[in-house]
Every structure is written in structure tokens, then in C-alpha cells.
Length: 390
Image (cartoon, rainbow, N blue to C red; front, side):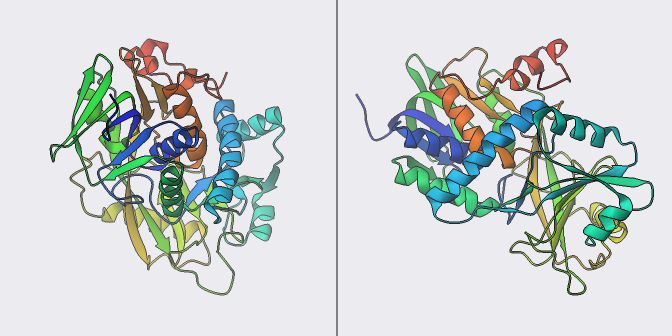
């Protein structure tokens, strides 16, 4: 017997992946519930902020294919939401001459017919004076890259999910997941409960703890990452649409930058530079990391004030050993679908992740081959293949 607390599918976790999944399911007419312990667009997880990079620039074919699916999804989402949710600025990947990273990007573009330009350091500096590349550097420019408006996109997905008929619950932390013969039941710390035939878990940094309740221990590292915003000196526009997004391959870990969107200044950060954390116990700002980013800005951005970031913000990465996602069913519980381990590069795929996870929950063929994202590579590491996208 169906009650107000019984659903076909529950989506647990309302960041970009969970909200997109709930919206996709509701649009299909599924009785779905979206639950999050915080409010839509909150800043405690991985899906907030004024902007995230969108791009086709991946060396693995599977991510390029997923990005193309996501680009179509971003366009549809903006039309449904009635507001712009992306801005194309172009994207510059730079590195030392002969960089294997740049060569792999170019090779993947060639294989899939993606237009791009190969620029010397001097050519890049003339065309994009926002950056300074030293002699001995080179760059690849791909015109389709840009930014997604992160918090507005998540809030739009929540709003649309509700409009399409999804039920939503916020401010309730799930304490217990109970597997029953006909599905599952979730209980919150406040004592409320909800039941469904199937469950999709997209809980970001809280995913490892929740999966332990389902006898699934995965090697996921939750880290706190930092980004900084730096003010512009002079009249050259560094706004979205004028300045390309940047990924710098000169160093490990990599640095990245986004043009100014809403928050004053250019957003710059180091990729995978933060400490492991308990998502409920967040450490203060890491001043050594701030100094490292400032040093990078002083080298790469001739028109930014590296000494005076206007803001330092934090977010969570939930990372797998190979930095590839988890998009799969629980190996022993066919009614449970897991989406996570997005490793600091998942947001751009949000609309596509919603389609993929909804298809898994409905036992339908997904729009892409998902072998790269299978759980078995993590539970049986000998099956892990670093050559993704074959």
C-alpha cells in the first residue's frame, strides 16, 4: 500500500548528480524522493560556487563522449530553467613543449573530430594576454570550453525536480539504511523514515560512511580543497566570455583557473592539494596552500594581484584511486545504485550523470558504456585498467 513516505525511487544526496537524477526521474513520471541533509546549493559539499569548468579536453574517449552528452543536457536544462547556466569562454591547456598531457589531448581531439588550435608560447601570449607562458611552453586552445554556474544550476535542478513532481526533503541526515525484501527504508536522526523499491546514493563526501552500512568498503579519499579569487589590475576584462578557462600542466599537481563570474576576481586553485578530512569536521584555511597558489598566480597572471586574494573558499573532493567515477549498482544489492567518487572533475557532467544514474535505477541501458566506472575495479584492483575509454 502506497503512503506519503513510500516511493518508487529515493535519491539520497542533492548535489549536482543527485539533483540531476531526481529531475530526470521525475520528468519520466517516476514517484521519486530527493533527500539532502542541507539546503539546495549549500556550501558544505562539492557542488557549490559561482562557477565550474566545462570542457571537452580529456585524453580519455569516454569522458569526451560524456562531455558531449552533458553539453546537450546543459542546453536543455537552461531552456527548462529559463535562465543561462553556462557561458562559453574557450579553454587553454598549457604545458612544457613536448608535454605528453597535451599530446594525448590533441590525439583524442583528432580521433573524435573536435576542432582545436596548437599555440606556441608567444602566440598564446599575444592572443590571451591574461596569461604569460614562458619560452619552452606551448598550449592547446579548444573553443567550446567555458563555465557552468554551479549553485544556480543545482538550485534549478531542485526547482525543476519539484515542478515535475518529485518530493523533496531537506535538513534530514540519514542515520540508517535498512534493506528489506521489497526495497529499502531510510531512517533519519530525527526518527523519520521513508521507503522505496530502489535507492540511488549520491552523497558526495558522506558516501563512504553510508556504503559501510551496506557492507561495501571502497577506497575513497575525502579531501578539503581550496580555491582563491584574485583581483584584476588594469582594464583587460577577465570575465567569463573574455578570458578562457585555464588548466596548467607544467606542475604536478595541476593548477586551474576560471574567469570572473559573480564573485569579484579570477578563481584559481590547485587540483588535489588538500588534506583528507572528515566531512563533518572541516579544518581551517591552509595558509601554505594559499602561498603556493599565490606563487602560481604571480608567474602565470601578469594582470592579477597575487598578494591580495579577495576570497578563499573550500569544497570537498571524494576521490577514487584512479580518479574515475563510480556509476554502478551495488555488487550484491541490485536495488541500490551508486554515483560518486567524482574526484574533483564531475560537476561538468551533471546533466549526463543524471541520465546515467536514472537509467541504472530504472534497469534501462545507459547512454554510455560504463565499464570504466564499475565498482569491481575497486573491489578487485587487479581488474583495474588505466587505459580508459576503450
